[in-house]
Length: 223
Image (tube, rainbow, N blue to C red; front, side, top):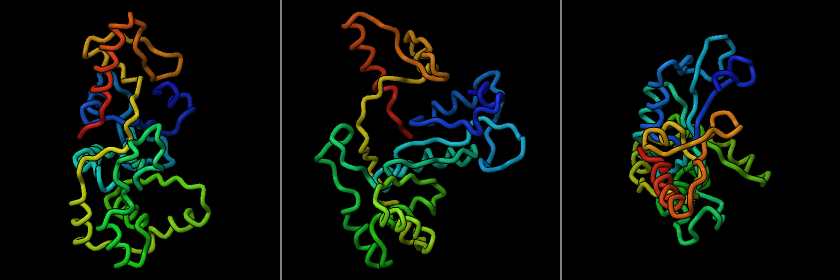
């Protein structure tokens, strides 16, 4: 990715589903050419390496420790599943709680005369988190833009902080992990043709099962 940056093929470099330890492995990597910068929208030629981290983040999983770490390193935290999920059975447990039906969010929505979704989005914006709110509905897309038209009080922000329960909607079993983690844990890996992506080398079925369980634990995104 550094070569892509130098060749002008990428303006910024970001990562997804990294925890603090994995971020530190990159930032402390010997020979790292580009260090993070605060302003990812700058148009000067200041070199930079890592400018954003995308993780699941919402009021039930506010990632407060990871957010504080990112801010200390001038890394922008980008939240997916900011409104919970689309309830897709391929990724989400159907029995999981519906975030936008939370009583506290509903009460706050009435207080501010906004939707529950706007309260959830505004919470993230005031924390300095970039939010990704996917929608195919024109009305909702326009509604989401109202997030900049009001502000939550500090007391209400604390109340929303209290909703955190370290609950994850995204239960996908990722099959790829970071190559540094594989090397650290003694797992053999090979680079895919895609730059910066790693995958486990083929092994016998019994060994593969053991390895996938280890990779699943490794890939979990924790504060």
